[in-house]
Each structure stands twice: as C-alpha cells, then as structure tokens.
Image (tube, rainbow, N blue to C red; front, side):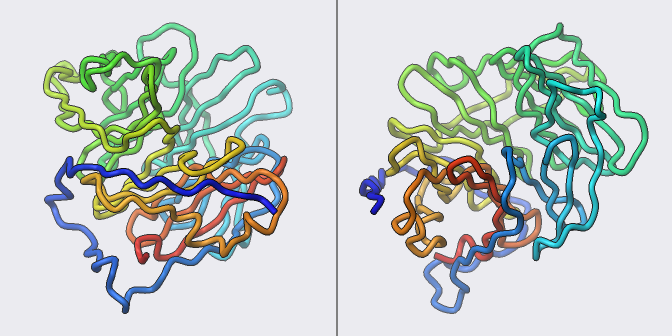
Length: 330
C-alpha cells in the first residue's frame, strides 16, 4: 500500500487584495449548503502531457500529437485541429492560449529550442510571433484576459510585451522585484483584473509570486519601474502552474507538498495567502492509497466564469484530463 507523508500546512500572512471590480460571488467555503468538490475524468489515456485549457465556448481543448482536440464537459470529442503536418518530425506543441478567435501556442523541437506561434482557431495560415529577440528557448506564453499583454519566458528570463505585438518585448528583472536571486521564472497566469501569477525558482525554493502594476508606455513597451511583486506561497517545495479563479479570490496550483516519489497534487489557496488546501486529497477518495505506482496531478486551469477547474494527471506512463466541480467548496 502506498504511503503518503503528512501534509505540512504553513502559515501564510495576507498579501494582496481580491478583485476590486466585482466578479462572481463566492460563498463562504464553510457554508454547509455549498456543494462539495467532486472530480470526473474527461479524457484517458493519453501518451503525452495534454496542457488542457478552456475554450471561449466553455469546452476543453488539449494537445495530442500534432493536434489540438476539443471535448465537452462530459468528455465527448467534438472536433480536432491539425497544427503540425507529417513533415514536422521532432517537433511538438504545448501551452495553448485561446485568445479571441486565435490560439497562441508553443512549438518545441528536439534541439531544445522553441517558438511562440499564433493561428486562427479553425483554419488559416499560422504565423510565428516576433518579439524582437533572437532564436532560443521560448516558454509559458500567457495572454492577459483583456488581450492587451503577453507574458513569456525566453532563455529562463521573464519578458512582457504588448499583444498584438507593437513594440519590442521588455525584460523584467524578476530578481529585483522579489528581492532574491532567480534561476528562472515562468508558468504565468493572468487574473481578470490584470495581476500576474508566476513561478520563480530561487536558490532555495520554487514558489509562486504575484506581480501587479503592469502598464504599457506610449512606445508600447512595458514600464518595468511600476511593477511590484509579492510572494504567495512559501516553504522548501516545488509549486508550479498557478491559475486564478474568475473572481480573483483563489489560486490553484500543483505542488510536491506532502508527497513522495516526485508526485504532485493540486492545491488551492486564497489570493491573500490564506486557506491552503490539498484539493487532490479531497477529490480522489483514497485512490492513491489503493494503487501501486506514482501519481502526478498537474496543470490546473480555472473555469473563466464558474466554480470549476480542469487539470491533468499522470499515472505511470499515461496521462488524463479531469474536471473538478466546486473546487472552492471544501
């Protein structure tokens, strides 16, 4: 029987205010009338990490081979989009963003280089986005909710740019913002009110931070001097893939907190740094303890309007996509 370490809950002081522009009202999590979290599997098995996201029509898009595939909230396949042709050997796609009528995504190669591309969601000719930077390793593209900014990582450094691109991308010295030496930054997610959650790997830990005050200058570059950063999670853990709830009250992320064998669980924390909860343990009904093998739960993405999120899982060599309803109802 698989054993799991006891989860160490740490005290996190309040950091940031919630959305000031309204949004969906979230009931008190301790309200007995609120539905409890529940989980169902949408797609399984898959050979590679699916990087599942929500579409504007509230379906689920994920990567499989050379395709984007779309399923409904019951897991029924609706359509697929060919992204890479048969001549694209050694390449793969990841990290899609659905932006208006377009999809922004990564094309990765075996040479450890990558590019950010954009295509019309159901056809047309794809194009590579030019940020005024040389060839290299691009990662974690994330377009803001108002579709005016894009964050990405280039050669382990954080960049921000206007979107659509109108000026050269701006390098953000994240070390200065968080007050720590930073090996790399990435895994970005924008809130509805323009704040940006990200992961920074320092000499000691890999934790989640929130930056705000992101403004465009008249030349369409970013005013880096106005950006402020605050730390959300703490401790010697690997916290990855933050995702904002639609009302900005919560952030979901995956982490190795309390796990063994390089496993990750899905966690939920309020955006002010309180109420850290292991969402995986509340929705898997002891499945991990009944199965021999290593589980990894990762890449949570909140629904844009409702109290639901999708996430991926890996068991041995197979991946799956899951839907959690009422994740904040613990």
